[in-house]
Image 1 (cartoon, rainbow, N blue to C red):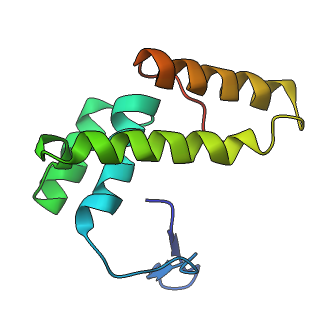
Image 2 (image 1 turned 90 degrees about the vertical axis):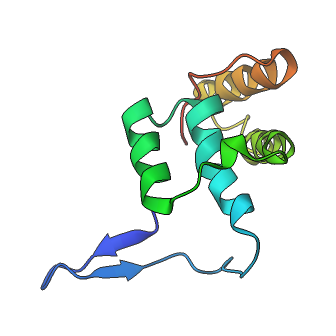
Length: 112
């Protein structure tokens, strides 16, 4: 979602941040957005619905989604974990995410 920039001149789109680009199963990438929607609360219902409609598939109905969702939650949490000494806000966010993973609560994650 955040890897597309518009050029100043003609407004054409340019893809950025392709250092981890790979060709693989679409479920892995779709599960990122679904996890951001269900767990982190970074997408509202209308935005996620528009995403699903545009792609033509809702990965949350796939039998393997739960495993990918939990994997992305851990990945998103360990990424922020490396910065808990930077600020109180980051430490509190890390604690919030760990509690969410432990209890299954959803929503309210802050993006960093």
